[in-house]
Length: 366
Ligand SMILES: [Zn+2]
Image 1 (tube, rainbow, N blue to C red):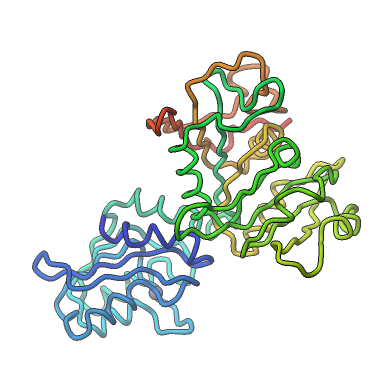
Image 2 (spheres, helix red, strand yellow):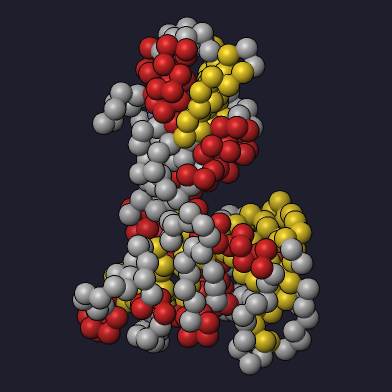
């Protein structure tokens, strides 16, 4: 199953809207064939592995990170393909929550006399496709709030300078996360302060969509996000009232720069309704969002309850006065704070990466 996970992981972000799955076919402890979901989401991992195994699949054990599909799509279901190939046993990471599959893949295998073992490395298999799970079960993408802070919780010095707070190793990890995400999201203040590229700058990487949340059109039209080359577009989310003005200001025709799209969104008093926006993104088939600040968007996202995980890179710096990591969350008492679970820390270069899951239903609405 670890081998199946390793096969699937590099495909994250490339298989949307389908999950990234790995499949390893084993006979007598030896790997006969393996495969992963292809870019674009098809063919599925089982199809790839079974094609590689050919007649050698008969009597083998197939390890699959996610329950094989049971619905007839453009291709026959994978559960049927495993049966037809004569596989003797199937070992599964987790069930597929997608309603047309949910348990039916397992039922199809068992009905054909195949032994099925469920729940092997289940937590890792669920985390692998946490984006797909969030979209299928909650209708919106999985959102990770990533910030780089000093030890005293500042994301920038008092002068606004925030570059190079985190180590090169941390920044390299962020580029991997961008490759796995469908979209990277920032607020207008971050674009004004940092003028970021938000591309994936690692070998073989692919750029995520870049989303700017800007209800008041404060983003400069000269920002690098509108001028760089990229195969993925930059999207600016603003109020419906500002749509026409945003189109005139940011959307340029022709040229070699990345495409720009304006997304009109529900809003109150110029503030974008992030909950409705996440449903819109889920409807577009996006599964994973990396929210990279700044402080006000981080606060608004936490208050709206759209953040699933926080990932703070804590650098060995004390900045003293400077910009706090999160603004606009008012909790007068500790019990009113955003509560986190499963707090864990790992050394990344000179930094500590502190991650935790947001406890749903405990976020503070202002
Ligand atoms: Zn399938």
